[in-house]
Figure 1: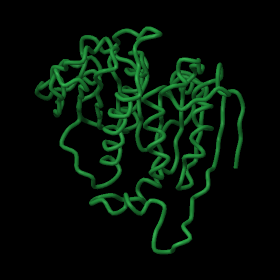
Figure 2: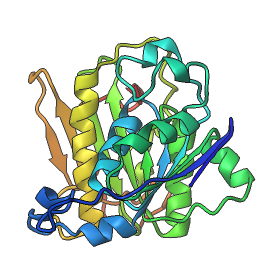
Figure 3: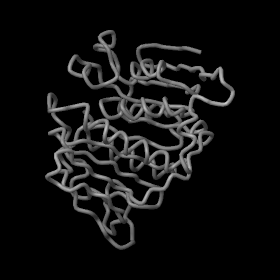
Length: 278
């Protein structure tokens, strides 16, 4: 099944069937302790941002066999995206949300349903689109959408996984906002809106792949019995700053969730007002 327009696309991919009945296409990952392929196949990911880091995670999810991805991004593909994002010359000046869904189809192995929208999160909300799913993945470079997703995911009782890299392409983080636990405002209470990353900042495939790998593991841990002892991971490629692995706790004075629990906010070495989706 295939439907495409400038603003929307829906593609039903086909599951790859092995000629050898002893093995499935996902056989190797199914051998991992705690891995549950059926849980992944039932999952729906709501992807906010189809840029460098979002496209890396999406490519991993379709290869692992997620059931459904719904991708939202109103930005247009430009020529500087082509060396690190899952776009090609044919995609130039077209909506990222639509083109990423189309380009993911050849990577799908498990019958993933791919839906792409050339809309922002706010557009989808205004159109009263049903945004329920298994999790949100937030890979945008503006604070308003991060905050709006935090609020929406709490209203829907969903987990939101935040991903970002710094403006020097050296560091990045993954933050998991679970229902009832610390939210994005608890992590960055003073600068949660930050500023939109400027265009033409340094960007590289290496940091995107590292952070995407952590995000993929975090998503697995939400859906199945893969163990995770953190809700915040921060990595530095150069090694001059230590990596961070912490449990961020609710902030009593959080401007978003207003928790009454004790505050154990971490201090990040990645400037929270200087983050990108590149």
